[in-house]
Every structure is written in structure tokens, then in C-alpha cells.
Length: 99
Image 1 (cartoon, rainbow, N blue to C red):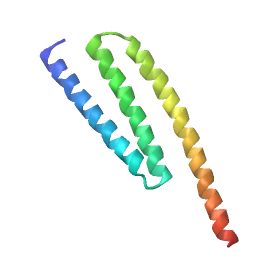
Image 2: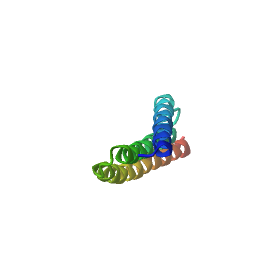
Image 3: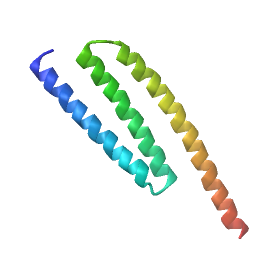
């Protein structure tokens, strides 16, 4: 691995760790359910990026398979959480109309 690529991968790891930390903070702090869904999706994307960087650093393409599976599972989880959040909003609106 060249010096430039090594520095770029190391910088990428640092940025991914920062992104995961900030997303974890947003996931814990909230304040709303959509904020938490977006934070969870951001963490999934950052972990997929981590797997890609790990594949570059190690030269092992197996990390790319892990990244692909994680991206698919993350997409399905995001869709499911978005549908759940939509139902919660609709129920709140119906409760407010009934009052």
C-alpha cells in the first residue's frame, strides 16, 4: 500500500469513528423518533464504510461481502422503522382529532 493510500485510509477510519460517535450521541439524545431512525441509519452507513476501509487496508475482499449484507439489513431496518414512525404519527393525529 502506498503512503498516500495509507494516510487516506487512516483518515477515513478517523472520520468513520467520528461519524459513529456523533450518530450514537444523536441516537441517545433524540429527542424524536425520526431523529433516532436517521441516527441509526447513519450508523449503519458509517459501519459499511468501515468495512470498505478494512477491506482496503487488509486486502481481504471478504469485508466487502460483510458490507453488502450489512447495507441490505440496514436498508430493511430503516424501512421498517420509518413505517413504524409513520404509524405512530398517524395515531397521534387521530387521537388529537378525537379530543
